[in-house]
Amino acid sequence: MPGPRRMLRSLYTWVLGLAESRHALWALAIVAFLESSVFPIPPDVLMIPMILARPSRAWLIAGIALVASVLGGLLGYWIGAGLFESVGRPVLEFYGKDVYFDDFSARYNAWGAWAVLIAGVTPFPFKVITILSGSTALSLPVFIVASIVSRGLRFFIVAALLWKFGAPIRDFIERRLGLMFSLFVIVLLGSFYLVKFL
Image 1 (cartoon, rainbow, N blue to C red):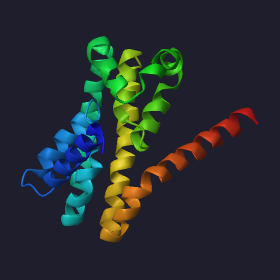
Image 2 (cartoon, rainbow, N blue to C red):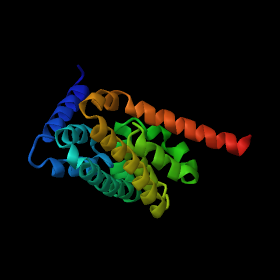
Image 3 (tube, rainbow, N blue to C red):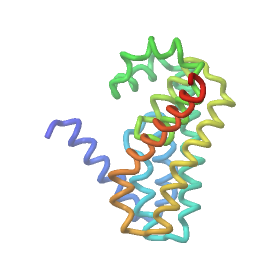
Image 4 (cartoon, helix red, strand yellow):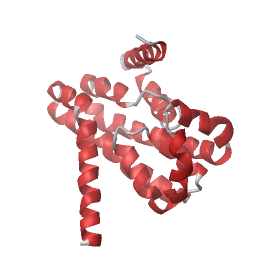
């Protein structure tokens, strides 16, 4: 197994282990905060076992993930706005998204709110969009509202599914929910396109 993949797997395992810590809520907040700007492991890795262990805390756990993720998104925005060349570009390079930046940034602000909404619910790295939003000077209120809506949808849908169905739904969430979110976004955008142009 290549070095970077082994490193990511070890990091994933370490983050998963934090779910059993007595400081799990703090760990979730830190992971959700950092994942929105630089960290490669999503907060779902912690959320899922935490909610399964304490279903009564599902909404609290989702709320902490939401608030921390939006605040972390502001860090990503700030990185893009003030530290793009020194910090933002290397992060984009790490995720292989730097080659798209110049073309993408020219059109970004016209569709920036949609980009934030899409990245917030799909498996696309949210940190890429937070950094791009700052580097292209997307309206900060638009960025914040779109972040709250998209991250809220993602985390509270996961929490609701786990609260309602428990462990049997875990495999679906881990393997299929990202795809379902992506298909929903495609259908939604396709519907808007049809309404506008047909």
